[in-house]
Length: 187
Image (cartoon, rainbow, N blue to C red; front, side, top):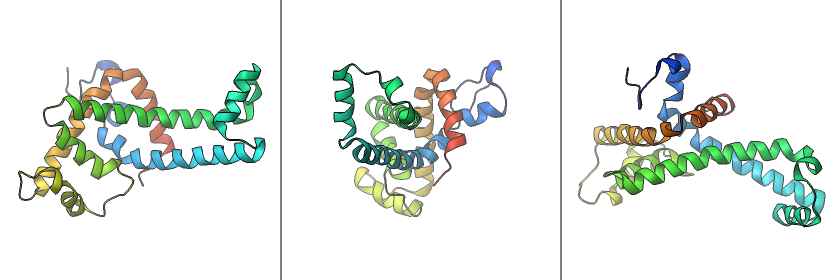
């Protein structure tokens, strides 16, 4: 069986779609955008609930449950927003859990975590690789300076480590990757 960028490609998944699906770098490139847009959506829903119902979302949902109301029926107009937030949250949770697992158990997990964090996951986007290297320095005290080639090697190895975790849940990941590659662009 041919080896993909970070996993085995089966006959069933060969082709153009599989290349994007197995592209861990592409997932990380949209991570910041998904997170940003999700925060905006959550804020909009919270604001809408406050204006519409005079309370925050959690208190509102608690009161609905206590009254025995069916959220699907009674909040049909909010369902699309809630589903969108849920999809984004699932994407972020899947990525975060995979990175945490890699950080905790991979022999180079701590190092790889900081490479991914400063490159893709922090709210602040570094201007260039040199800025990322500066931020990595405190996490690599045994090195005088992390070189660019070392950074790119560590980054690729981190992608491979996270990819091997992600593709264990192939069906769900494929659906999520397809949805997010259509909805979000790199920021």
